[in-house]
Image (tube, rainbow, N blue to C red; front, top):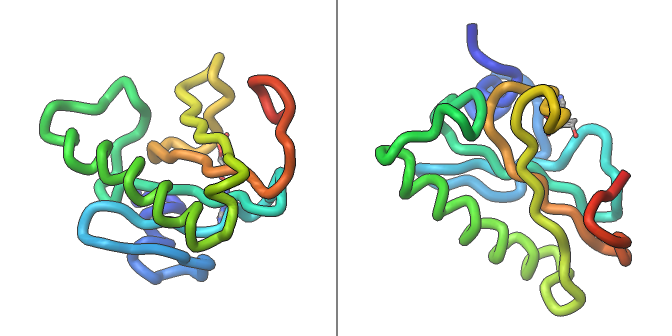
Length: 114
Ligand code: DGP
């Protein structure tokens, strides 16, 4: 079954999409932890970092390049921000479609945002 993020990527359910290309899609987190909280997601449904393969290298790199562009678009590049990828149970991953959180717009404190 398609993940909730695959449905947003496909336009089947609403998502506040801020960036999309042939490899990745980015949309606002439904439960923002900071003024800017965006999820950057490979269009291919990869459950966790543990399932990433060499074939996914371009999409993984694109996620970082998209984060840079979106941070500029959001006006948070100069002050800085945090990129987070949770993996599995101990990583507190809730949605099993790999994603990178782009969090910023305020000072975040050391290491973890909550
Ligand atoms: P993680 O714990 O890393 O798996 O984070 C999952 C994030 O996904 C969490 O911050 C809330 C967000 N989220 C869950 N369901 C939806 C949804 O339907 N739409 C959007 N935009 N975000 C969602």
